[in-house]
Length: 268
Length: 263
Image (cartoon, rainbow over all chains, first blue to last red; front, top):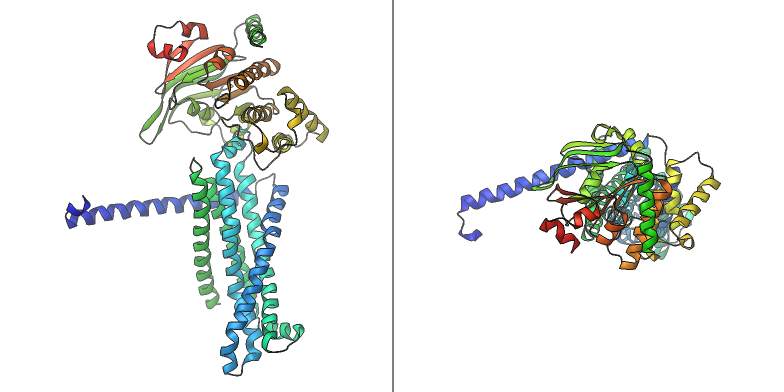
């Protein structure tokens, strides 16, 4: 039927469709900003949910250590193995620790940690809150005069904001171990010598912006995971949609923040 | 069992008659709610007096659940007055609304138990959040008391996923009763349960109402439940109250639509 429409009519329909998609995107973005604002306000309201926040920190931090550690080790190992031949051509093998430290601390460590956490933590939060929404558990909290936003969202967002920077530092450390192992495949160096060579290349502007970036990664991963779950529609299908959407949106947000952070750091 | 339930109901009615006319604890005037193009509530008027159990009957999609969700501020109405304990819900700020919610219990259709918590934690959670000054021993005693009330003391350490539908409803009821509400709102408490369990839940509703002197609104399709628990019934059709009266009065109605619920 669409083929029978004239080109002007088809173009008009396409414009209308795009306009509606744009409207939906702006609506979602507005809601997300309002959700972030409410989360920020609720952080400072008493009573603070210490117990639940600590539990979420345990869930986000401790339970991700194996996955992040393994990823970090492989990251350091692969990076070293793949870089070595190029640097060896120029007789710059001694530069490997420095190059690894700068690339891991500035970029690869925080981004890989954040992406792993998007899949692991963001999806879990989206599914968990989505399931609570569908089974009316969030409504049950609300009608019992318990603030579900403070109890469920603030605690989770704070946990990711605090734990993801720590996980990134941990991933950086393990990546150094991986790089050290890879270095010793072809060359022989002590761990102390490797670490000294790695650290001498690191500067203040390598470490601090990376740390600030991971705090933002943590904030958006928690926020988007919770937002998607909290706004899941009724029906079991929406739980899967919330989890999936949380991963996709949070991963995209991580890359956007990374790009902006790279531009800002470049100006410093 | 049915006899004891009828006796309990009669006793409740007698007690209320002895105490004279009661003031309404819930008053709804001209309530309207529309979702996109679908007008769900179309000017609902009703009142619930202190100690009274009002049953709301109606077919699916007639706006019964929306009505009670408006009463606790889960859904914001488009128009109309909603008064609980003489205060307009739509004019309350967040703190005032939460204060009001502490006096109103809500039993969800699927009980809405927190599935990451055990039965004990489900019951302790509202106390931990809302009764921070209460001594731990008193909280434990309250948990045991409400579990005893609903006859599930043995289930205290079970997870919600291990409970049957009827047990989950009982625990859901216990979780609301632990805060000693003055009003209970039941959203289809017997839906999805077999006849026996449905009877037990109806019996429990009557007993709890008598024990804690609770006023209530009960949404249901289940006629035996409506017969056992109701003091008065209102019937909703397309978002409007079309009939009102006791079970017996409505049972004898000439209206075909009303009769279709009873026969």
